[in-house]
Image (cartoon, rainbow, N blue to C red; front, top):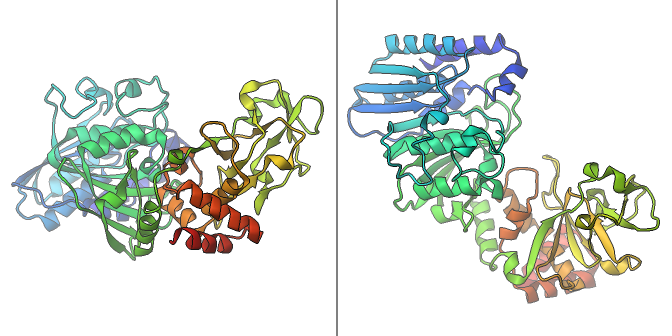
Length: 495
């Protein structure tokens, strides 16, 4: 059934403009990914099974899961399948494919297509816990490749699900939260999702909801961004998640990784507390023993950075929103505006002859005290060797300024109480974040190319005295290379 539906889907995709599908957040699952997802479910109890496909599209995931049941679970004698889809262009294809599956299924199949908004049709039942007073339909399995696009923060879907929303939500994680709500106790859901939900403040409420009321059992990570979606050029990092609706203790998570064609799958079993970690419930996507060792080493060093009086913040000036305040040259009432381009080999190089390197000092919200900081680039290219790229900023190099500004594409580490950071401490922070160990830790925590302040602030760090000793040794050596930082870090904190 999967091959038949996949062939019909290929024909449909070829007949529709890519821009049209993208506007709908519609990216069709490849048959290889559909087959992998369907194969991740555990054996159901009983002879009947209720399945929900809430973003059904052409029905490719439904076909894959029906094939999987027929091939693996002979005790299942009947299936009740619900497909939810609202796109009028794809509905005729979905209905035709459903009719085909009903004719060809070796298992008694009762299938229905719901042409309503999946989220809004249940919003009156959904609550901030899974203990809704109403008694909506519950399913044993949910399988989905949800739509992917941002909603306004006042969209009806967002307003109806405040417990999982922060700002303008992406519709994909609202689908996942509602699917957990639709599971019966002990039921399982398999979702293909962007990796972005696994970390960051934007998804904190969603992670809390998901991981308080369910337990991750399996994760599949792709080594390549291409080919996961059929005939689509999707460059978003994606993953497959399997979650069971239960509050029972889960001891481990099976994490597999492969190319998008699933031709060479590696597997590792990781302790649950290593994968789901910290108050923010970050999900660490570990794929090897070496990465487990990285997490173990860093987690042993101490509490997060704010506990020692330091915090990373995001640069204060969004340059394109302050065009009228930007200047190419120093002048009366101007301050230096530091960009990512000023971070070079561990040091801040300024000026470099770049346009708009100065800012008039008439906007208080864009200014900060001229004191020591560690600057860190917010954005790096996917192919760059390092994710954490930083430089020591020393106020003593720019004594003519009382205030400075930082452009929004860099982060800076400052003291929580506004006191002066010593030269040694600033250099110690550089040695820490410039090490191979911390760069690897951050890459495991966040698969994107953006360095988020909330994630760096959650990373364990050594004691302040150890950082100052580390910085002192770096200053004495004068060698800002990663190799030297690795050696100094190992000598000072024994990792």
